[in-house]
Amino acid sequence: MKKTAGFALGGFVLGLVVAGYLFMSRTDKDDPAAARLSDTASAPTGGLFAADPQIKPDLDFVKISENVGPAVVKIVAEKTEKAQARSFFEDSPFDDFWDRFFGTPQGRDREYKTFSQGTGFFHSSDGYIITNNHIVENATKLTVTTVQGDEYEGKIIGTDPRSDLALIKIEGKDFPVVEMGDSAGLKVGEWVLAIGNPLGMEHTVTAGIVSAKGRDLGRSPGVPTYQDYIQTDAAINRGNSGGPLVNLKGEVVGINSNILSPTGGNIGIGFAIPTSLAKKVVAQLKDKGRVVRGYLGVTITAINEDVRKSLNLKTGKGVLVNTVEKDSPADKAGLKIYDVILSVNGKPVESPSDLSLKIADVEPGAKVEIVYTRDEKERTTTAVVSELDPEDKGPAAVEPGTDIGLSVQVLTPGAARRYGLRIQEGLLITDVRAYSEAERKGLAAGDVIVEINRRPASKVEDLESAIKRARPGDPIMLLIHREQDGAAQQTIVTLRIPG
Image: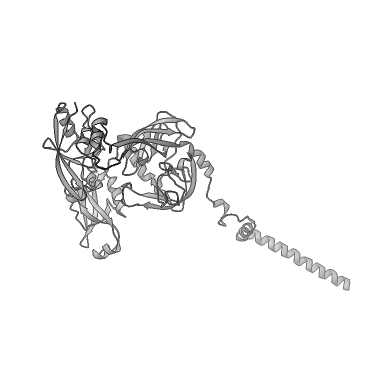
């Protein structure tokens, strides 16, 4: 009897064990969540996030570097700079002696060569290269070195200081090219790679994320007019300028341009020009050698809380009109100081830089519909956009052989604003060459030629024609406008045509 009871008890316990095993086994199969929990618990946890490996983003930096790297080049720009050689004694009585016997005043500007280094990348297989304007500006020689170590002489096709972009070219074919992506689709937090030559370290790759979009660095000397920067914490240093900022598809989404740093080195705040802006600029540089932009004729500022309350605005949207240039498209369209521009062609205006970019993209001569508020009422007007500085095409030197030592450009209202000049018409002197007649008569860069031989000076051709008509030894009379220490004065200067 006891034996039979023992067998019965043992069988009962064994049955419970088997039943429990079958129940647990079935639960795992029937419950997908339990299965995933089990898999997660058994998986290694070395990553930052316990995410499903199947949805982990592809961070194959090696593949991206191998695909994009060959299209990145090093650019060395040779430039000629000037520095004044100071005399041991200011206003020394021996200066006259020095001039008479040596022909070189002791305070004469001395010329010397400098070299700057940056980065670029191939835009097309026939040798067109995108880089920054500040790298190649005023360069007398460009040397381009590929990743294979081959050296080429570069030629400047066009530059655009307003966006800090430039297009150069080398002779050859079948160069490796990278694809230009869409920067508008970038998201804050997205991984990006910067490739370039920082501090002479050739073909360096750094990684980071997009820290912000649409950055504006303000208006100060050396800062481009048109800004819509991508901010990144990918390490960018001097020498990275002009190099590509690349997304995880291997597409260029930005051109590295600036860093924000109290020390001049990387602190994790770098800026790249978005391809949405670069594509338009590069296309015009390739086609025309310069960039044509629309012009409205207003200065503007952002709406802050004080402005909103003072003008009794319902929202802080739009931009405030500070000034309206006389006879400009804005003036003809009826815009006035204190107006708040809300939209252009149906697209909201988010900031001053946003309005500048929107107007710049408009073809000169085209009409734009502007919605604005005045005295708490919303209004609509139409402006015919003109061209921004149509004649401001950079310095134009007079012909060699009859050289009086001047380089000049047409002074437009836009150029006058940039240089802080009160006068808005004439020929702006951009350079006075050493040992020239102009230098001997005291002319300097920044002076404005108002009249030539008592006739208004409005075109570079006015000066060229006056020089061509004159014979060696003949004088040319110039009325010069000069602004210095907050004061403006005009003086007559006579230059003799070299014999």
